Image 1 (cartoon, rainbow, N blue to C red):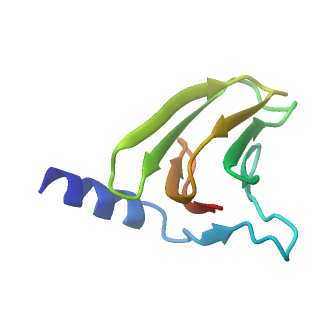
Image 2 (spheres, helix red, strand yellow; image 1 turned 90 degrees about the vertical axis):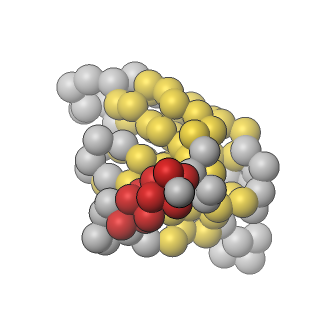
Length: 103
């Protein structure tokens, strides 16, 4: 029951939450909100914080079942690539949460 509530909370946390997919026939699409970016790249997820951000950002990655996969801080100006199996993930920061498909 707790997992179901966590999943529903994460899915409903941001009203403008959208599904983002990386398809082989299309250019890859990422989520960029202000200074934080999450972009699927062929079996991985690339997280970045722009150079003009005043502090590091915390990215929390959850599987669609609500299990936390990764919790990491990314420093300004850095790109971090997280290898993930294909599937649906929820990426959450202090400013937004988005569903992302890794193919």
